[in-house]
Image (cartoon, rainbow, N blue to C red; front, side, top):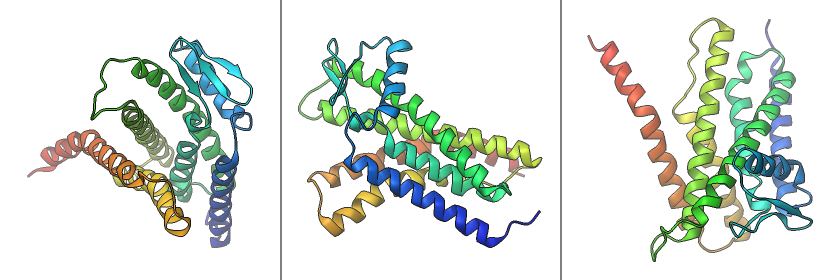
Length: 239
């Protein structure tokens, strides 16, 4: 069944509007407004990871043992938006019901954000107390590295799982840009959007260092995760 172009455009516009609305809400929201995503992530870190987290209204979830506050910056909203957009726009052409796939993408992205954020909270709690810091490696830098590794690796794994399910549903091998799509979506949303806002309105100092770390880590992870598969395919197809 052919899908009308208007349905493609309408669902795509809805996806972009939803992502923009979530980002705009997040920019003004506090811990109380983000409890719908902070709560499940903190619960996962507490029940599965054993991190002592107690909710304090207005502040978020506090771990006294690890001297850590899980607040709005730990909500994983940017990751949620990246996952949602990457899943919807990468695979929507395989589904005649665009709005149904939009809803499914939002649900999958929400679940992935909870799991990834819960893992990040668990890892951050243990890294915060680790004796690994010096003049070069500060807790803030380690926090950034851990967050980027966890979120980007989670995006790639989720993308590959969904791609394999779409392939199975289609009954044939689809040609998804499995290497470049997660990378472009992650860098585009995590760096491109803040860079555009910085050029328009200015922004906090330190963005260049942040961008360098994020770009470097994601590029290295992309090579590490996809190079072995590319080499195997090259050997297999070599005449």
